[in-house]
Amino acid sequence: MIARLRMFGLFWYDFLVGDDWRVALGVVVALGLTFGMSTAGVPAWWVLPVALVLLLTLSLRRATRRH
Image (cartoon, rainbow, N blue to C red; front, side, top):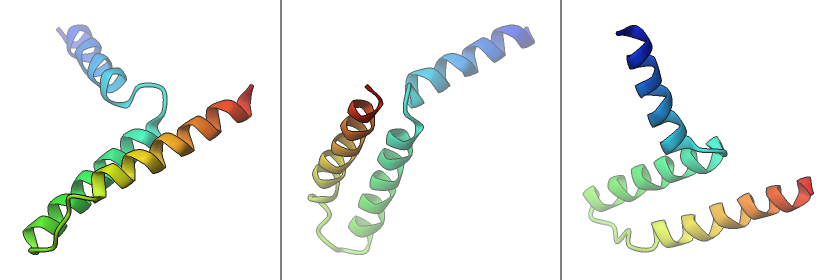
């Protein structure tokens, strides 16, 4: 039973985090920032598109630098 729970947890970690934990952390931060801004009454529609562009740029830069 413990082995199955461990495998289940490892599956979800690999599915959510994947190869780059920095991108996963950036998405969580962007979602939290969007939620915080929207509950404060500040327009937050722009946070996720900006985060997407920044995270994609950083991820691609890191990937191309390795090769």
